[in-house]
Image (cartoon, rainbow, N blue to C red):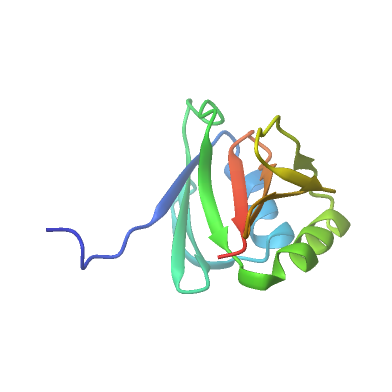
Length: 125
């Protein structure tokens, strides 16, 4: 029923201006639409991310959005670090950690948080 429809990631934030600075400035996403100071839609590749104000911002303790970055993961981790992004480190049995990147066989992943504590991942897919 929904298999041929696009899906959009949504992230709740407390301060929309702080979030815009992070998502647009730090991560380099392009503003597509603004909803009267309550939400923004940002473009990332062919996908969209909706960032909206909510009292529940940062309460998700799991990954909220994942970017599929292919073989660029190590370069992107370094570039994000240069922009001030701090990567998360987790106890991940069965993985091999090299710096901020975890390997699970051929799959590599790294996690960081936005200013509200929303967990974001990048993966080499």
